[in-house]
Amino acid sequence: MRTPVIAGNWKLFKTIGEAVSMVNDLKPLVAATQGVEIIVAPAFTALSRVADELAGSGILLAAQDCYWEEEGAFTGEVAPKMLKDAGCSHVIIGHSERRQYFGETDATVNKKAKAAIKAGLTAIVCVGETLTEREADETFAVLETQLLGGLEGLVPEAFSKVIIAYEPVWAIGTGKTASETQAQEVHAFIRSLMARCFGQGNAESMRILYGGSVKPDNVKGLMAQPDIDGALVGGASLQAASFAAIANFAG
Ligand code: PEP
Image 1 (cartoon, rainbow, N blue to C red):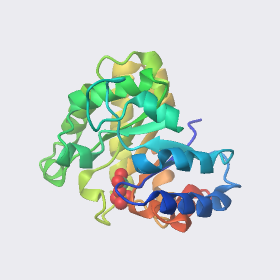
Image 2: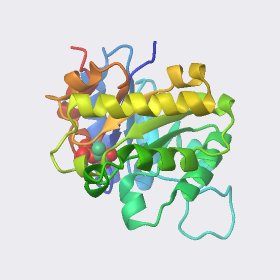
Image 3: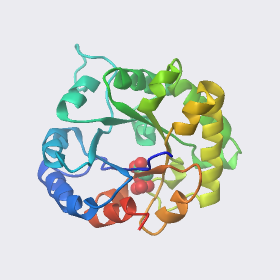
Image 4: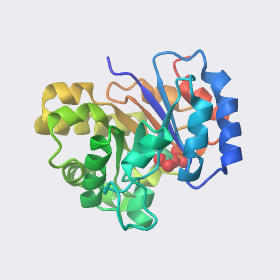
């Protein structure tokens, strides 16, 4: 019912040339993949060039961040409409690295998500608890705060343009994946929260991705969980073979 999404976040990796060669390696490996939305998120500098390479491939393009204003004196920022112009259909918002190193808050996530949706992009909104928060039994409370703050004021109709990525901070880039049971438990919680806030129908159709050390050898088990609709992949998205193996999880 919900089309799975496999998205690769390339973070601060790959020059334009490296990005182009990566997608050209990837294209034949996923050419026969059906029923999965495959997304790559290169650095800003490579977006436009990668968009050209992806034309006709079915692979979609995301940016890793955006600003909330359409234009103005905001040195260093990139507007959602500029991302559209560069060929993006999606934008990652509120990644834990942006929250941790660049002062991203639920309030800025909210402004960015609204601006992205207004510009016609799909917002991949990231949430997740730290290890300290999990050990203090605060996971659900933290996620509730992040989601209610990050999605505040969004009208239910905007929900087709939102994908949520649950990324426990302790699992990102650490090689520690949440167990299938841990991830499913949180995804079910997120879906029930979304139903409470935005209606059962919107919650049922919303894709909720898991992120945190997803690899070819653990993706199948995660994807078998009823509320896990895809993966946001960091490290394993940097090589065509491992990313394609994840996108081809269904075999
Ligand atoms: C990420 O960057 O969103 C991520 C999940 O990274 P990794 O897969 O490397 O843990």
